Amino acid sequence: MNRLLKARLEELRLSNKGPEYRHKPVITVTREPGSGAEPIVEKLCSELGMHRYDWELVEQIAKDEHVSAQLVSWLEQHPPTGVEDFFGDLFSEFNKEYRFSSQEYLESLKRVLLAIAVPGNAVIVGRGSNFFLPADRKIGLCFVAPLSVRIKNLMKEQGLSDEDARRHISTLEAEHRKLVKKYFKADIREPDHYHLVINTALVKPELVVQIVKTMIQPP
Image (cartoon, rainbow, N blue to C red; front, side):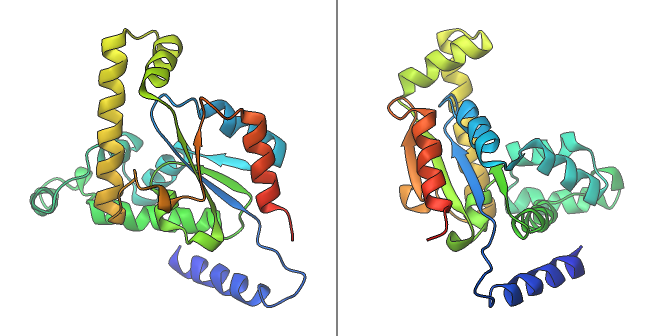
């Protein structure tokens, strides 16, 4: 995998020298829980002819590392501390089935993201993709909405009570912050990490698509 990626990156570097070459766009999506980003992502993929990557990243990492997708997902939701990683490595010596550290996860995630980013024409949802890919190789979108709107969205979409929706949002937000801080040393809430921060309560999906189309059009 590493040799393949190096070869493809070298091809990309050489092709960039040609005046006719234009890198196919990659869009990274970061969203607040309940912000209603899903229909916008679907519309972007449909109208721009891009492939969406979300759970596929988990499945590919699991395949590459010969572990279960559930284990990869758990590690995303519960990024271990340094001490936990240390004891996890000790434990793995006795139980190879669970030998998968946070560093191994990060390296595998980076390889998968590069494999997607090199050919481009992709929308990558979450998993810290915005914080790994360089700014000139992506359009970083962050979807937000007022808490009251997000609570109502989850109550409608998942049939949750007000209290359960609040708890769900709080849990997911904490997981997302921890993942980005652990693996990419960044604060997911800082707006300067993104090309666009979009309030879905105020901006219609059609307008978002038009803006992104303008951004990826050749000059």
